[in-house]
Amino acid sequence: STVYRWLLLISSAVLGSLYFGTLAFEKEDVSTAASALYFVIFLAEDFIAMFVAMQCATVAQAAFNVTEAKRLFGLVQLGNSLAAMVVGINIGVIAEELGTEMLLAVQAAV
Image (cartoon, rainbow, N blue to C red; front, side, top):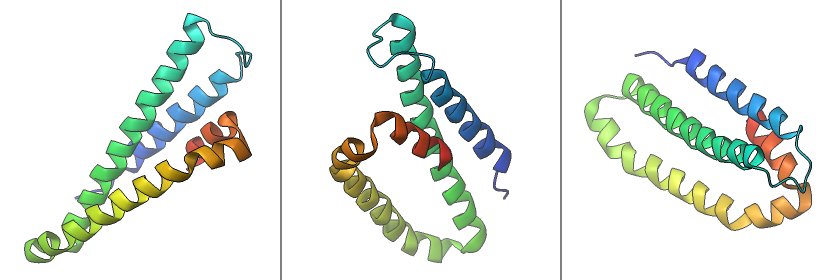
């Protein structure tokens, strides 16, 4: 089993280029192109999250045998769920501090 680094690199590059594409629009721009670009960013971020989850499963498959993997899967999923909840609860405060555009830059960098 292989970690598909190229898949993660391409996904991050796409998200980064989409972020730089948002710089072409003014903050008050509500055109169809701007709305479509933000929708594509939303989708790209979800795809990247799925790719990362698949890569975690690939690494776990290589690192553990079946019994260990079954035992640890619940803990890994619990950590994933807790992280999503903590970020979801705190994202409003972070967005107010950094600004929405900076959140996109942070996501592209991560």
